[in-house]
Every structure is written in C-alpha cells, then in structure tokens.
Length: 125
Length: 345
Image (tube, rainbow over all chains, first blue to last red; front, top):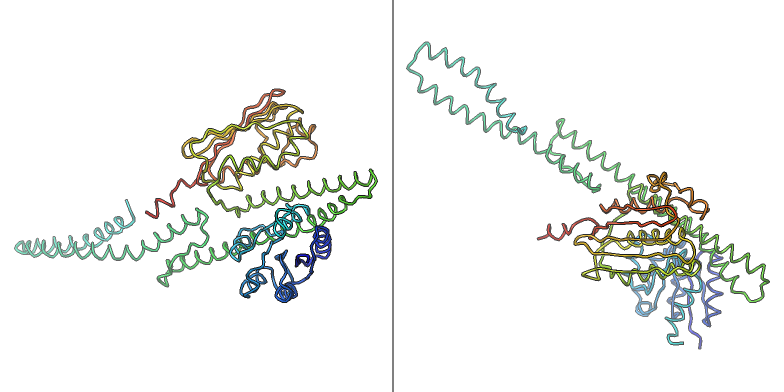
C-alpha cells in the first residue's frame, strides 16, 4: 500500500504543484487548505508524513503542530515545515515541536522537497 | 568633582557664613564662650555633611539610574527602564524617559514585523512561480524553444529571489533589526557547503576555487549567517569578475580571537579611481557593469555593514587586469569577546 502524505497549504497553485510532484514520486496525497481542516485530516487519517505551511487561515501551522503533538498518535507523525517565514522564532518553535525539517520555500526546489520526502518515507530506494 | 561633593561644599559654605558672623559677634562680646562656639561649630559640620549626603542621594540616585539606562539603550537594549521614585521634576524626567522608551520599543517592533511580513509576501509569489516553472520544465514533450523559454523564465525568477533576499538583508541591517548570534561552526565543513552552492557558477566559468585553512581549532564560534553572506558574496564576486579558466582562492587563517579571510582572484581588478567607492550602496565599478550588467550593487555594501556590526574589518588590494584580494578580519564570538562567560563567573 502506498504511503500517505498530507499537504497543508492555503495557496492553491502551490498545493496543486506539490500534490502533483508527490503523487509522481509514488505517494498518495491528501490535501487541506486551512489549519482546521488539516488538523482534522491528520488526526483522522494518520498520514505517514505531513507537509505543513505556517501561515494558514483558521488555525496557524504552529498551533496545528502544537495540537497535533498533544495527540497520542499525532505525536508520532513526522512533519516537514514548508514556509517563507524566515525569522528565528518560527524556526525555534517548529524545532521545539519536533518537526522533522524546516524548508524555506523560496530557497528550496520542488525536486529537493520530493527527494527529501522519498528519503523520509522509503529510505534506501 | 562629583555632584555629591559639590552639594556638600555648597551647604557647608551656606551654613557656615551666618554661623561665623554670629560666632564672631558673640566672641567679641564675651571671649569666654570660645569653647562652646567650637563645640557647636563641630556639631554643625557633622549635621550639614549628613544633611548634604542624604539630600544628594535623593537627587543623584535617580540620575545615576538614568545614566545606566541610557548606556543600556546605546548598547541596543531597548527594554531599559528607570524606577520612578518621586513626583517632583526628577520623577517627571524618569517618567518621560520611560515613555520615550515605550515609544522606541514599539517602533522597533513595528519595523521588525514589517520586514518579516514584507519578506514573506515578496517570497511567496516568487516561490509559487519557481515551483510551477520547475514542474513544467520536467515535462517530456516540450519543443526546444519552449524548454529554452522556461529555463530563462526560471533563471529570471531565481535572480529575483536573490535580489529580494539581498534587499531584505540590507534593510535588516539599516533598520538595526539584524541580530548577531555566535554559534560553534566547523569551518572546513561550512566552507564545503558554501562551495557546493557555487558549483554551477564554478562549472560555468571553468574555475575551481582553491581553499587553504590555517586554524588551530576547526570549530570556532561565529555568526553563521554573517559568515555565509561574506563568503558567498566575496566568492561569487571573484567568480563573476574573473575571466573563464582564471584562478580564485580562499584562505582562512586563525589569529587568536579572530580569523583572517582572504579571497584572491586573478580577475579584472577594480579601477584605481573607483576603489574608494566600491563599498557604497548601489555603486558598481564601470568595468563590473560591463562584464555583469545585472548586478545590484548591494553585495559589498551588505558585507561591509555586517562585518562592522560584529566589529570586524574589510579591505582589499586590487590592480586592474591583474586581480583583487579581499581581506576580512572577522572577530570570533560575534565581536563580543567571551564577555558573557566572564560576566557569569
């Protein structure tokens, strides 16, 4: 069975192209366009990995991450933060909430992110 | 002479003149009372000194607090406030100082928030475009012309991202919202990472950057971001302004509490007449403009401002058509000289 990646991103174009790239890499993709929806999906579907934007409507990425880490199962899900926020405070908070990686969108290629997702979910392949 | 002593002398003079006059009149009237006069004179001196000291304390303590707070502000501590201990003019001064600091702190916060928001808002559409172009470029059924156009659009977008980053770094520095954070850095590994980013350019110019380190310890404490920006800018410039198949070298020597970085190239050099201007914002040397027309003139300006921020120095030697060597003396510990450690002890 294919591993599942949940992409939480409010920008439609970004969400679309990320989902396309990750599907192409051989994973199943779930999409959410706001924090509230993302959290619900994460808790219900228990994806193998979450790609999380930080500036989100309804519930911010950091608040979502905090709520996710309070859940028994949600605690285990690896999260890649994917944002254009570059200030240290956001990075420190994400690290403190046990995110697996922090990518600045404008400095990361789509290919790089897809490779990192592959490395995380199917290492050695 | 401190204010305290001045006040006591003033009090002594003011109280002793009437005492001496009255004393002299009494003495002339009845010379036998000289003993009592001396006794009362002594008492008066003790009383006046005591009174002067306590009055001076009331005036001087708040002033000393203000001096301390002002110095803290000078060292960029905008949370400095003074206690308001009275309702007189001095209390009013303290209150006014605190109000001014509240305003300053608020302005500073607004500036920082503005930069962070602007940087986010500028980067977001650029990264969307970059990803969409990347996805399109990976498509297999493109004609040569389409692939070429996409590649150019992607390249232009990358340049725009770099410009936005450079502008934001520069405004961070100008607004004073750039925070220096020294951390342990493994120098050779760090340089490897920087060179990795420059690889496409090295290949394009057929130049391999030679490196040489003379360090007692490989891991040193400095601000990674500043270190990276210095190296990226100087090495990128060296590559840009050196003809294909030329030479570029990076040397780093440890010198006690600082390191000396040398970036040596066999490039076009900087014309003598323009050498004094190259660190100016938006300035580009005439020959640089010819060789690389789309530069912004922010690189060296930003590098110099950052180096000065950590109390370092940058200078260069250059000869046209022969090459340029940039020197950077970069203090370790972000220019703070381990003082935090010592202060704790």
